[in-house]
Amino acid sequence: MGIMPSAADWNTPTDEKDAAIKHLSDDLPDDDLEQLLKEFSDKSPDALEAVNKQVPDENSSPGLSPSRASPKHERPAKIETVSNQLPDVDLSFDDLPPIRKPAENPIPEASPQRQQQQQGALDGAGSEPPRSSLQAGALAAKDKIAGVLAALRRGDGELIWKDCGAEVRKWREPEDVTTVFLLDSGSSPSGLIATFKWTLTNVLLQDSFPDPPTADIVTAASGGGEYVRERVYEVQPGHDRVLVLPRNDSKRECSLAHVYQFGAEPCLQCKVPVGLSIPGRFSGEYFEVAAGKPGGPGKVHSECHEAFRERHAKKCLLCSGLILAVPDRFSGKFFEYSAGQLGDHAAGSVHSECNAGWKRRWAPKCLQCSGPVMVVEGTFSGEFFPYEAQQMGAHEAGEVHAECHDAWLLRWAKRCLHCKEPILKVDGKFSGLWVTYQAFDGRVHEECSDAFQAACGPNPGGGGGGGGGG
Image (cartoon, rainbow, N blue to C red):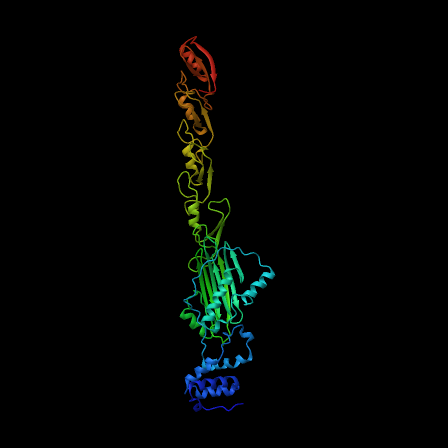
């Protein structure tokens, strides 16, 4: 062991100090070197700075990674600890290139060999991303993240979800425990929505990369305990978003857990991806609309379902209201009609509550009462008698309700020449048979014939008989 000089011995010209520092950093044992630094650090800060300049940076040595550093580099690492020259990394890089969406490149199913190649690329076995630790400084971190993004955008990393042209990829740096997520909306017409629940300890949540973490995140990550954050990330069509989660303090243990949901299939009503629970907006419940149904096929948020139904609902042919269930008004049931089925109308639907009115509108009118010849509960059975024009008198062709027929006959029946009552069948009174008297151009009930002849004298000119009608 060499003779350890005192602090006074450092009052020498600069060139000599530099040479001595280099000699000491190479030859002194660890304990002696650390004691020496403590003696002169307060009196000669310039000398301490010179020591650090002589120490090679393990991360700047070409061809070396932390896991392969030679013993010569272990002693300068102690000098770095004493002088506190390397603060924890700050991942805010204003000079990073803007995030751009790559061209669509379908990703084939990864074989075991391809997965190994991807993992090798991510571990630094190939060109990108580089193997330097994110804790080695801002410049190294900038290069690291840039390399990671390039790798993720070309299809490397772990593909954890893909749908409707959007995808989510994940990359994790095993050495410095940094995780990166790439949320890429790809060709999805509705973009991409992701929900995360993060449970973190000693990990920064940098979810607006390249912007730095917010002050509350830095405080929470530095507090020494676990903290939880829930986030909703909306990525517009044609864009992507990067989430970076580095370890905050390299000297402490860290943990990261997350629960996530992703969605890109658009709601048929609002076009926002469906199937995710977003507080204050969507419960995550939805309706499926089958092919062939109005507006289908696809899915609709439960919160959008009513508006979707109103937009695609048919209108009643009678009242023009939407054929939907409306409390205290419409049950939602309806009748379908083909074009011209009842009259000069188009094909369509009619509320069950409007159906009677619809049929009444197009039903033929009874020749007697002018009511619709149709089933009317409690009034008409729907049965009727057809009549040709002028068949009973000066009337048009048409139909008569079975319930109106007696009145119709009575209205047009001939009158008996004797009793003046209509010649009709009346139970217990008239059989409906009659006798025609040509000389009088009329008819007489069979029951009134004898009385009529007695009143008119012998040979009143009676002719043939008849019956059964008017």
